[in-house]
Image (cartoon, rainbow over all chains, first blue to last red; front, side, top):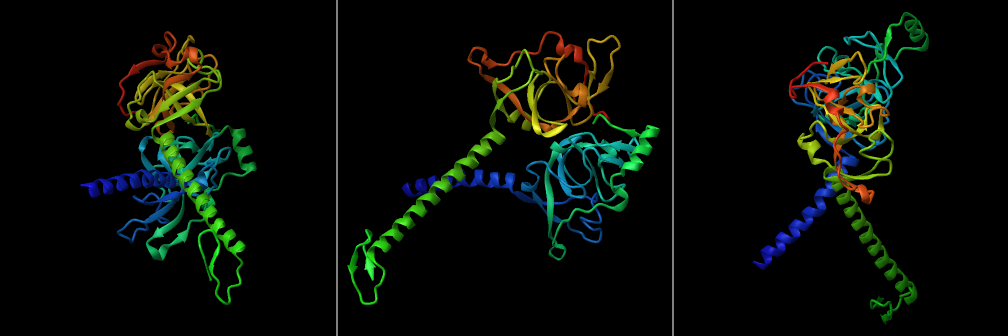
Length: 185
Length: 203
């Protein structure tokens, strides 16, 4: 009985130490997550595989909400707080972006927002659907692909040539025509 | 060559060249290092417990700015809880802390004036009123001081995922502490014209 109580006590105290330390580690440093869905194909979950990719979600690198264009980030879906989505950052605040299926053709990204898109155009619920997204919704940056092992790699920022923010001359030209809209989230 | 724990040499053996003073120094150094490691370990442990409490249970907030007057003034200290946000029991009329949609590094303190699916008024008080629906997954936040508050009427509906905590009590100043006062007379009815919360409405 005495031994059982002592055992339980040490187990409980170990629990009290281990759980907060683990949770804090996951909150500050990062964690591992499995990517679901086809929205980031062909970069993540390439079609010919029957299992899902596993990525390292780095929390530390986005502690100040600083990201680069082309980074792959995970964020809470603006339409469903429970849902986490993984997308590529296309444009940052102040950039003017040429949208694909959004209601406005050209959009100036408002302050504190960014424009995110899945790589797999047409199979992704992204900024082309819900517009510019608050940067505060960002949760982590995907920094490595961990699994499958043959695809192990550090994820480098990558922006397709046709998805770069528009240059100054084009913006000035479009603004003359009044084609650039600044959406209210 | 062996010493007792005070560093005194017990039995000198040939070939022992380390003097007792140096041995004592190293043994004290070792115990100091262990003590420092224990202190750091406890600090990390309590830091982690503090982080979890502040992140997942309750939090203190020092307010600044005029947007929630007369309910909350600058320098008031509030205690807030996270469970309502996690369990999604936030209701219209609650005062919440959220990450600002226009700057992720600052927090805003506003009153929930509409939930998803509600129809809200963009400009209560003016003659020609404009209305819009609060889209799915969003809330409509308005400051009590409606003449001097930048809120959803400026930056639109706020994603629910940006909400951090719900204000529970005001703990400072002592004369005005306790549960928060309700919204100013007529504020919420003027803002929220229709409510069928739970209805999913696109855009």
